[in-house]
Image (cartoon, rainbow, N blue to C red; front, side):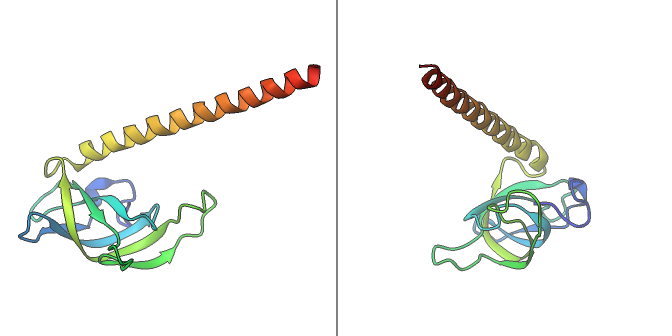
Length: 146
């Protein structure tokens, strides 16, 4: 999730995470570009009170009954990319039960590890698809030559 103020400049994050006294956090802010808006959970960056650096949080975007968890969808983005993965502008009006991942103020480090896992997963998927395509072509060519 990125924000209007900084896009990929994480230091400009305006989203805030407030301790709720239960060991979790309540998140408030605005996310200008949020991918996979229809997912059940999210990872997001926010600043805790008094912090200058962001922290990484895990939160539910909706409850078991389908109600959104402190999320208001402003609008869906009209995009050229994968339309099956909706992207939207979101206002976080009090997302409850957010869990801190990693250490406070080390959100960039923590999300970087997640992004690296995603990159490896994508690479494995591409290689697997190429291997399958090659196998199909090989079989077709051998049948055509018979």
